[in-house]
Length: 192
Image (cartoon, rainbow, N blue to C red):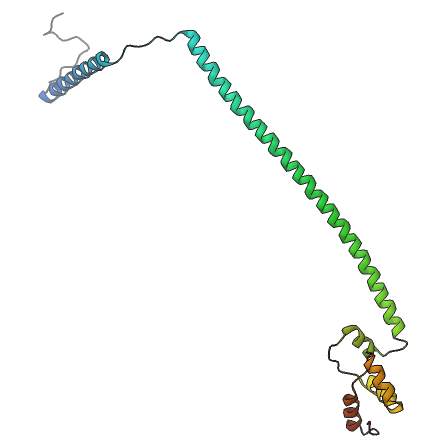
C-alpha cells in the first residue's frame, strides 16, 4: 500500500498535535496498566486447583445447613402455634364461663326486681309512698309529703309513746320536731 495515496472512500483531514498527544497518552496508560497487572500476577500466591468432588461436598454441606436452619424454624413455629392454640382454647373457656355467669346474674337480677316490686306492692297496703321511699332509701334525709305528716300527726296525737316506740323500731315516720313544726305552720292542735 502506498502511504501517500488516499483510499477512494477516505476524506482528507489535518491531524492536529492535540489529537496525536491524546493518542500517545492513551498508549502510555495502556502500557502502564499492563505492567502493573504483570507485577500483581507475579506477586500473588499460586492458584490451588479444587477438585469437582470438593465443590460438590461444599455445596452439599451448605445445603444441609440451610435445611437444618429451616427445620429448626419450622419446629419453632409449630411449638408457637401449639402455644397460641392452647391460649385461644383457654380464653374461649374463660369467655364461656363469663357468659354463663352473666346469664346467671341476669336471671337473679330479674328475680330480685320481681321480689322488690312484689314487696313494694304489699307494703303499699300498709305504708304511704313516702314511707316506702324512706324504707328503700335508708337513712337519707327525707322531705315528707302532707299526707305522710297528716297520718303521723294522727298517730302521735293518739299515743306519743307508741309513736316513739315505732320510730325506735325503724318504722318510716317523720321526727317529732317535724310534726311540731307542721302543727305550728298549719295551726293544728299542739303536738307535745
